[in-house]
Length: 369
Image (cartoon, rainbow, N blue to C red; front, side, top):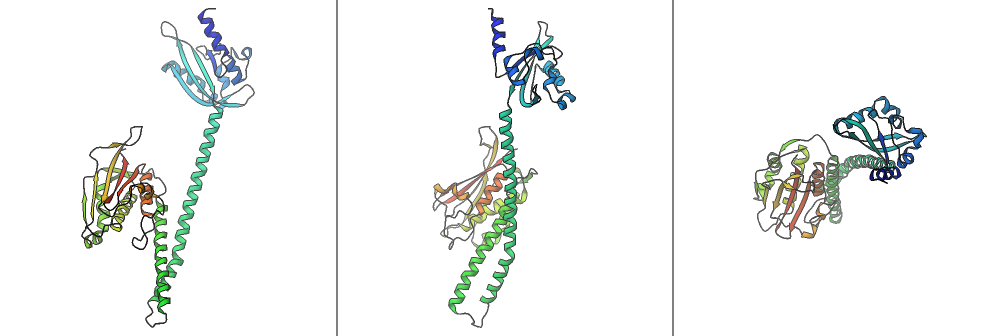
């Protein structure tokens, strides 16, 4: 048996792929066992018929088979995935490659067509897509619930605070010292709840990614954030240095919130034994953060505050994570979690680096495009 005969025998015995030959017009000339297994026709039934028989009525009406042949003739090859029809009328998800065959003068004399049944893969992909959509819908519902619940809690809380403030303002001595102390503790707890609700509402605002990003001058945004805290910074004699920063695509109010939260964090966790120093700078060149080679701007926000242990570099961004006691350092533990979510919304990253007693640095990575 010569090599050509052996080759045709090998093709004919392949069962995992439908391998057939078409003439210039798309008429089937050869048929293998894989084609019989996948498509359901025996060789005597299908050879001599046009290969459009494997396509759905909609694809036939759109002349997809003819367009695939034309594409293969023009480009040498045509690749396509879609629903195909078996002899019994059932469908399968087929991945096909049509390759043009040429004579010695370069003229197209026919085509080879290889089809693989990927129905199981398609079903798995569809299930994953459906699950992702369900999770996305559930996530939106949870976000909406959290927002509504937090918003609705504000009004009764305001009334509680109002009545407690009114009772504490009573100068007639109607309350004993013990009662006044208890009421003061309740008022402080209500204040913490108020702060938590406000932070939860803020967090709910930044849980959605928006495709509508606009160029933002980071220098202007950082200066605005510092201007909002000018009186506090001046009162403590703090110094701030803002170096050259790039323009990034983003949502301006979220980026302002990002730097406001980082600044508030520096102010809250300042070292009482030295003047607070804050510096915001950028790497001279974009850095690479992924194996794909995508480039990111790196912004560095650093201070000389109390810092934190290196083992907390990642945990510091967790929801409600607190590294210090509430009595000395008030807060809800949501500020840096909001920063992380804002960076995720901008398809970026945030990392932290702390040294106990020396200060902290936050690295913000924004995509360059």
